[in-house]
Amino acid sequence: GNEVKNEVLWQARRSPFGPVRDLDDDGLRELVELAREVLREGAATGRRPRHVYGRAGRPCPRCGALVQVKPQAAELPRLTYWCPRCQP
Image (cartoon, rainbow, N blue to C red):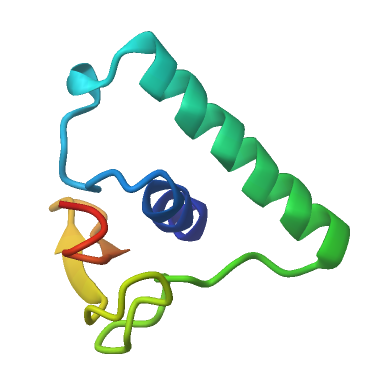
């Protein structure tokens, strides 16, 4: 879901606002592998990492910048959490 997307993009240091077409095959593989790791960890432990998801206004655990949140999509808005310094 949206939580996994936010965490995977944070781990990969990728902007959640960049177009997918800008990713090369290696970049896409990296995101798929990270998503698989996050989902497997969640299945094994019953918890998923929360580095940025749900942490708006709190410090990024990697760099200390404040985590931001922004709604995306018009029909079915979802909240996107990201670090403006780690995910330019």
